[in-house]
Length: 134
Length: 134
Image (cartoon, rainbow over all chains, first blue to last red; front, side, top):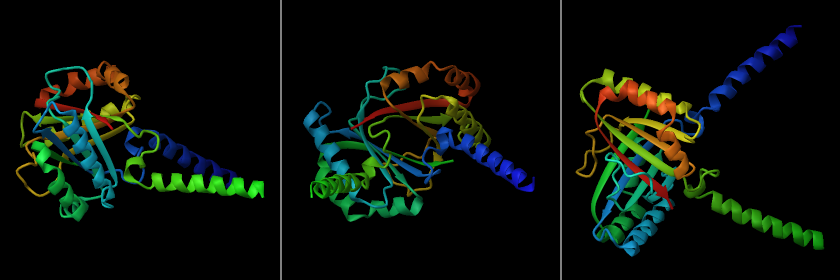
């Protein structure tokens, strides 16, 4: 009886854990509160698909940096045009870091510095949003 | 011998797959090219931690929307102050959708509409970047 009770308690605990892990917040189980670095690039030649694609290629070279835990490179999505939606940019990079220190070390990583050297002629402006997830 | 060759071929294929999946781009194996919706909120009372936390609470209610595959709520990270880094905002939401249709359906989801009704008094301005990952 004692064993059965212990089993039922364990099952209840497991059940509760399953409910929690079904929520979007815990989809990424190994990094629940990453530091997200989002850089948005406006091209010098906004109409140039070639320049946009070249910059996409450049951002992808950053995937060699081990401190970046996830890297997503994007271009403007064809979502509904609304006043709040900024569609004037060209290329976006979204990076997940474990913590502030890893983001700081990324800034001085040689692969990042090569990226700036080889591709910065393509952009006019950059805006960065660094979010600490909570 | 045929069986052994077949085994070796399979092993080679698996080996190649393992190399690919070790790269940051494929960390999220089920959604390699998500549509990423990033909304940044500037508070009406920028200095109010209470308002910021209330809005964080509000954004978290959106986790009930099944079309959102991943949701990250953030506040300004304490990264180095540089000209390109915008630290003037209050709360950020980053959502991963499978595709354009899911993002459109999110806009009209009742949970999203309740969020706007109950929390929009807290913000002065919103800017949205919708990125199609490539």
